[in-house]
Length: 138
Image 1 (spheres, one colour):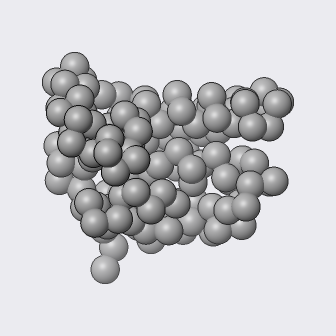
Image 2: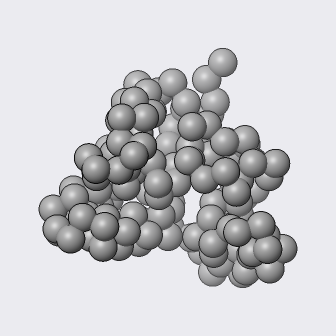
Image 3: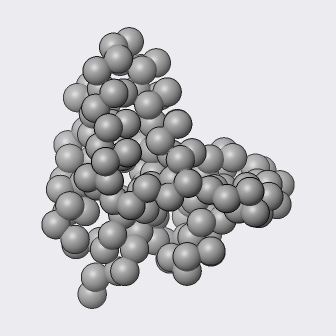
């Protein structure tokens, strides 16, 4: 059964655009499946955009991967772009206070806030810290 929506985490997009990443091949497969609609519509927040382009620029030491990743997110080529509202940022802060001890970053917690807001049960992520909190497709 196809999910309606799935939130896409930074690691998937960053691994896709970084051929040296240990998860590159799997990320390539996952994003191709997402483009085919196998997981439903991808949702990518502004926080994921920020984290993805920053991470790619730092890891690859080249602007091209970060610029390509940012462009596909902005142009909604792998999913819907979803900027957070102020209310969702406040909700994220409450979630962060609860889950920081599990190793979730503030950006990870934006995923949980958005998931609750849009009634999404799935995240496309390599991060095991989500296990037991939200269904992780990897």
